[in-house]
Image (cartoon, rainbow, N blue to C red; front, side):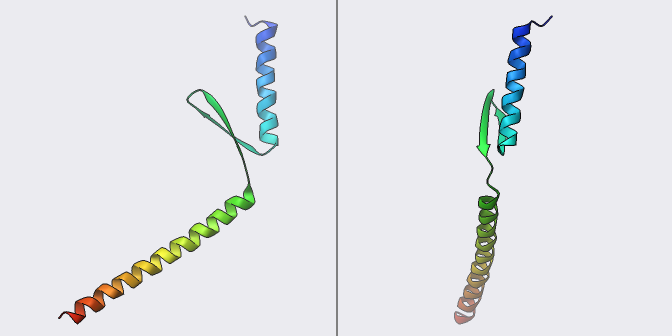
Length: 77
């Protein structure tokens, strides 16, 4: 049977977790450690935009490299 101390500690932990969620923190449990990460929606959107632009530039660069290889191949034929 649970004593009043165990119930109080459980209630305290639940309260801390609910306050962290209310304050927009991500809660991650890994390797028996609690990790809180602050959510920042504007920063996430900015990172996604940069990654999208970077992906487009990588695709353009690959296309240009293919064209260069094709031109070099034609030059040596």
